[in-house]
Length: 385
Image 1 (cartoon, rainbow, N blue to C red):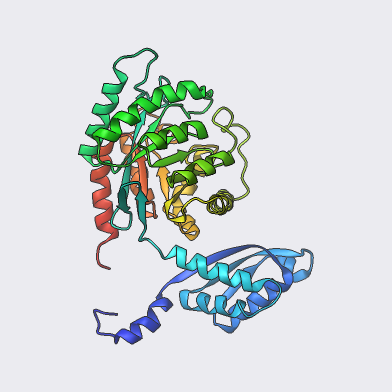
Image 2 (cartoon, rainbow, N blue to C red):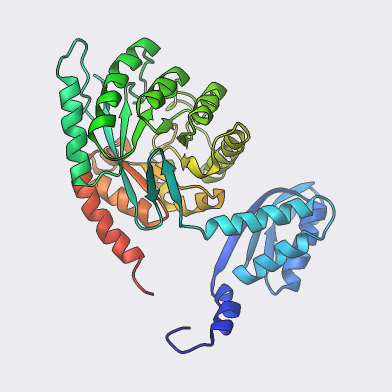
């Protein structure tokens, strides 16, 4: 519109007409569904409902709203004037549309501030374990070298372009057994103390134990990467007390049994609901809303098909209004797809696919190659239409 010389006021009016969205509303009463459908039709848009809601065989229905951004905003304003709980639905619809359009996240982590809207950021993985699935664990019992090895690896990662360093002292590979709090502290805290003095990027602690998170945050970390999605409510208190950042990840069950009896009716929808509830609980518990990151948990209680579906529909998670982190590096779904132990090319392809669909942070092992791939991806994403 600017290129063809449209008046600025005209652009403001017409631009929302160029954006078409399909928004799903879950478990709406037939009464409300009828109101919503009629309002959508009056706006020149439409709403799809289950056949059972029309015949009276069901009491509720999911609804798929189909319309322009302008029409959906108008619907939200109309719903705010309606009874039967539709006012709240209208408010949530406005919030969801606002969230979906937001890419300009500023993530404050301690003395650092990451502008996630400029480009896709990189979280570098350092496994302080003897049993990492990616065979890169640095830690061995009674080793006198793991501190030096961790420092050298972190410094190399930062030099290659890592924006965050993520340290973990417990393997989360499928079937992994839990380690004791004492052992996890022994593996991680000395490294965090050292790196906090030596590197100039935020440090993340990959743990689901509140005791480990507390020690890490007190030592120099500023972000907790919790694969258990804050199920332990004590973790919320720890993160809030330290005014730290947190990654809330979705996982079915625990690493020891997460790949057994995997069941979803709608994987993206169920993960979204889980993360929404976790976000609300975290914020109610005092965690800074601007320091919450979400992770759909690729490989954690998902099949290969689920993993690809999550990446394909990653932008759907934007309605939650939080930066999206995703970890695809060297994971088994790539090995199984390629039928090879060589995973770099597959990991890069998955990272590019995720970045193109809204990932703000990619958690990876191979920094230099990922940074180069994402530089091209970001250039494409930011190119003038």
